[in-house]
Amino acid sequence: MFGLFNRLSLSRDMGIDLGTANTLIYVSGKGIVLQEPSAIALDLSDKSSIAVGEEARKMLGRTPTKPVNISVIRPLRDGVIADFDAAEMMLKHFMQKVHEGRVVSPRVVIGIPSGVTGVERRALMDAASQAGAREVYLIDEPLAAAIGAGLPVAEPIGSMIVDVGGGTTEIAVLSLYGTVLSESVRIAGDELNEAIMQYMRKIYNLVIGERTAEEIKLRIGSAYPSRDDEDNMMEVRGLHLLSGLPRSVTIKEPEIRESMSEPLSVIVEALKRTLERTPPELAADIVDRGIMLAGGGAKLKGLDTLISHETGIVTHVAAEPMHCVVLGTGLALEKFKQMERVFSDRSRRG
Image (cartoon, rainbow, N blue to C red; front, side, top):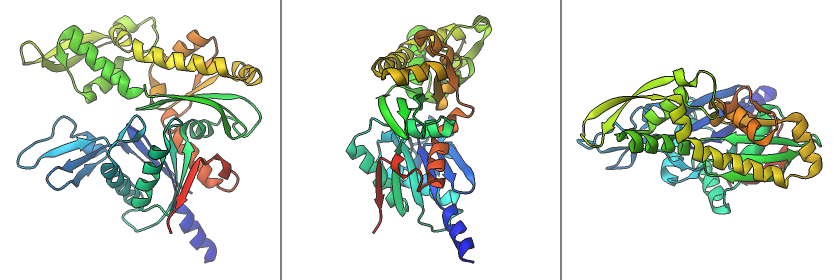
């Protein structure tokens, strides 16, 4: 009976990838149980929650002002909390959803960008505590992503991870469960979407929203030329600036690649800077083993080829790039005693 109680208690513990674009939750003994957009719809009259996650994302750009003034908020920007109250409500909703409304006080491990400040770390820990966590532990996202991608971070071998998320790109060289050096740039999926929106406005005088830009990126976006890219095209609808009326245009893959070239070059330059600072022995390991790409941005067509071309080092895409960070937090949770030193901050209630 005591063993059963222990297993039930363990099942409540969570690993969380609280991302700018998506939130994923791993529960001990169960695996990944939740993957939803990091969004919440609020009634502005009383700040109450109307919808969270996917239901809130569907409302983006479609909210009314009368009789109820509804606003869809993304509580995180650039990997950190931009709206504390909204983040707390969203996190509490997700935690309760995972546990089917039961009141529990789980131990929580959260992945965070390596470049966040102490104030930003404390805000995240406070939000998790207010949402109901008994203990909160933070782990740097690059390390969590490397663990989740199956890199040999426990060994004295140099591993390089590039985690392209929604708000930040995390680049790190790892060895012996630690970060040898890292760089965090606040250029990632959101900035790629913004670049597409600006391109459509500048070239076609067409105003499009975030959801449309994201769809363009996923359908015909690419980071490196391919043989058939001229054949890949898409019809895009938006609001024409000059006429003020809805209009549709047809765009091709090379255009979208060109529109994203500037933010992609920032990511590549940050990667090169990190390689230049890498100790020789670890650099040799990276040349032998290659660079690992993780995060939702890793799914951008040709990004691995672009990095290989620019660095001369073979680049791999993780098997499940979007799941790497949350799997890493979950594995750290499952092997808590063995991996306790990977946590960068911790707090507990009481």
